[in-house]
Image (cartoon, rainbow, N blue to C red; front, side, top):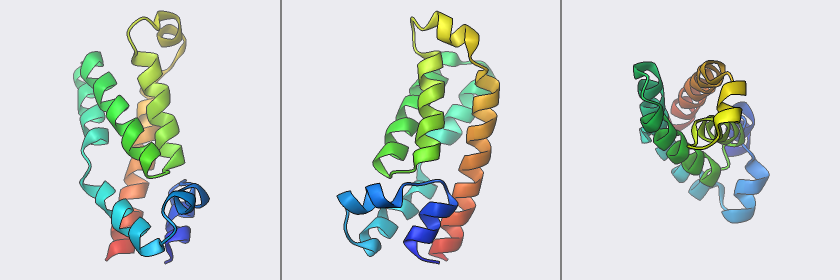
Length: 121
């Protein structure tokens, strides 16, 4: 599998990443480190525990990590969760099904981790 194929499989923006890092071996080195990032798992744990503040913090970190790696789908979901949980966004929070967003992020994250592990094996 190529780096481009990996990005296509996990909902990433390969062209965006390529503009920033023009060498596939460097992109591969960075994206494979995503497997060790704990921000998404911390978000899932905090949400399950009912700790919205910790879930917000973890979503904010996940948004940054995913955006930096051009993992577009994961970054978008993390951002939506982050904004819904942001202090002062009461109307958005009330109109957002955060449970559904967290579930979708969890599924997309699992797919990405498996694909990245297969890629790096």
